[in-house]
Length: 345
Image (cartoon, rainbow, N blue to C red):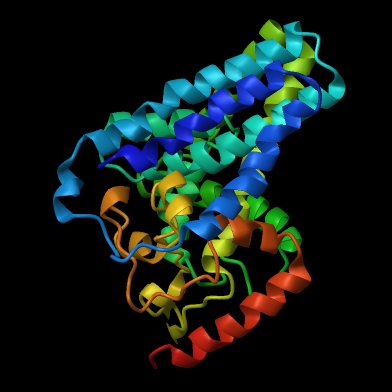
């Protein structure tokens, strides 16, 4: 049954209605995403079974859940730009609307894009690329699939948070490191085909051109305010994505078994969370260990693996906890130590 995974579609109307009511109502969606949903997630408990029914892997309605988000996100962003330009909002209301939309494009849009870029069909990868372009992060399609999944849990992965590293130190490292990693991956790919890095075949250069054209179109259609709003929601979305990355792999390491190689990826190299609401809202992204064990699995087939370490709360609660490093370290460092002690030798 796909019904629980449609709840993300309730968030855009909430933003539109609240901003329409003006004043402090414009900030209500922020409280919904960062306070109400984590609270409901904590109260929702965990499921009794670890996976969906096997036949659901072949149910195409689960795919429609992710496909339809593309026009929804584009429409939401168009609404944000138009509202900021034409509806005579105060600076405070524009900022609140921008953060609210960024929270949705980050938590939902980035998660759906992540699902789509892992699929084998070209049109699904295109849908994922469109979602990433609308948050100014298209290179994630290269770095995540070809970099993060290969190097997760090693010093070569900018998306793996190190033990004792605060989220505020992690964010600039992972953003800049991800860009550099994507460029190196693409340069290596082109070198394999005897092509120069600075050519029209370089996906990174094509992504840059698309973003330049997109920002130019926004500047023409919505002016400087539109550009600032679009960039602002992108920054919020990127931060949310990378904080989720921080949560998913914090402190978990793969041992080096040879001077040039690390041990294979195991379930204990990612943190899982079984909480119902965050799994519904983020289409089973919190079943993250299984995703790294088999990236081709569609989200509805992901399992909660027996030997994967569990977070002490849902993604919403852990997100808030990560923003307070002393509390985060107090809760998580001893759990990292326990995982490392129990890891097979």
